[in-house]
Amino acid sequence: MRKMWSVFKRELASYFISPMAYVMGAVFLLLSGYFFSIILLATHSASMQGVLGNMAVVFLFIAPVLTMRLLAEERKLGTDELIMTAPLSITSVVVGKYLAAVCTYLVYLTVTLIYPFILTRYGSPDMGPIYCGYLGMLLFGAGCLAVGLFASSLTDNQMVAGIIGFGLLLFLWILGWAGAVVTGPIGDTLANLSLLKRFDDFQKGILDLSSVLYYVSFIFVFLFFSARVIDSRRWSG
Image 1 (cartoon, rainbow, N blue to C red):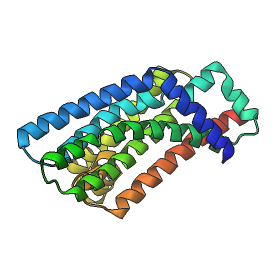
Image 2: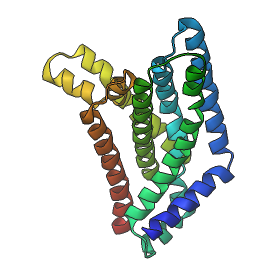
Image 3: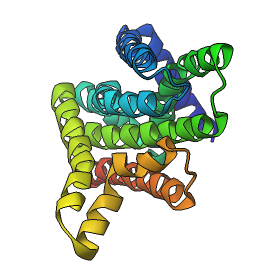
Image 4: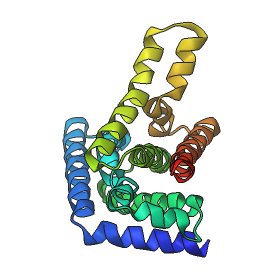
């Protein structure tokens, strides 16, 4: 646990030393603020449903950028060999780096809490769906970051890692469309595997434990894949 904490602190510091976290944060907050303003002015409704949906789509693009360097940079610089030979488990490295990315995302998400505050200041919103929506945003974003980390484990090129991550996330997004076209059990399965489809219930204020379990399992699977990719290089090397 102490070693994982060391990796976490190092990665979190590296995020906020470089301009990347600030640029991505600015993009996320500017776009979410734009959607909040436009939707509020258009609907005159004290609701966050449409805003959170658009925020999720925006983060689908940002997550691969936040994670593309996490493991790819280690491989490019050759420091991954030090990790493999150090008294540090691969799980500690993967989880520590992942939690640093999630913590960075949490900073962005926390800033957006100003939107519900504005709604409560000038209206009477139903806070239940808002709380549920933010829980969904947290789980959805954490899932996207797990995919991005896995993509970063596959290559030593950050740009390639970003493209692979975005491609995987886009595929997991459009699975919901395929589920709407294909009928029967196959269609239902495809729809249930979609990242955004699972987010819909949270967005509507429905707390479905199966969706929570889906995201937790999803994150675990991609972190496991990332660790196995690194471990395979240890034995092949």
